[in-house]
Image (tube, rainbow, N blue to C red; front, side, top):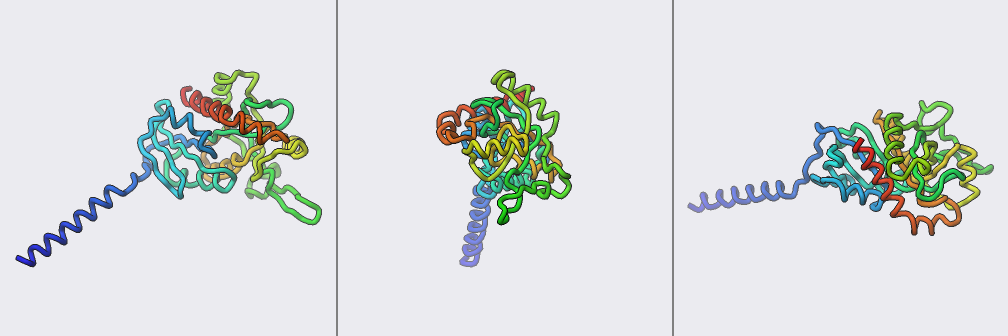
Length: 268
């Protein structure tokens, strides 16, 4: 009788342990379903998209939350990677390794470079470059971005998928008007640029019309994985001496505009 009671307790404990594990286990990513990956650096840059999406579940991978569901009827994975090249590349890599991603859209805010772009204008990247990749010697900084990926050639640029660029451009025009939408080069670096002198250098050296802190790193990851991508940026500031104040006042509006463009893009 005692032996039976002992085995009954053991079975009860085992069943309870299995049930506890089942309740606490996270839903495994579905690698069979094909998704559109949407990445941003900050919460306000994905807030609009999350408010419109039908989220089925949220996976946490490496402290980053991946919101899995549908947006405009299309399967999506939406994540906030964090600010800067390292976190953006890490978040994008985890997304590509854990989900069957067919293309990547990066959306968010940036600083305008040059006279053509104004605050709240949109820039759809045709190509991206890491403006801070190079060597610092006694003579100062020397850019050597062509070495950031061995087969980029002499240019050192990452090129966005042409079809996605055109879709993003048409969507942006429908949201903010043609006079506020530009295609061109975006320069990426691990610095918040608030300098008229450096802005001019980005324009002169790379032909950039916007600068930010994540785009080229996400592009590099997509390039390595052969995943089509596009970078959509709303100008929250002019990357000049007033940049901090401009972001504080216009950042949320600019971020929402970029989110609405992604929404319109998925409706096409």
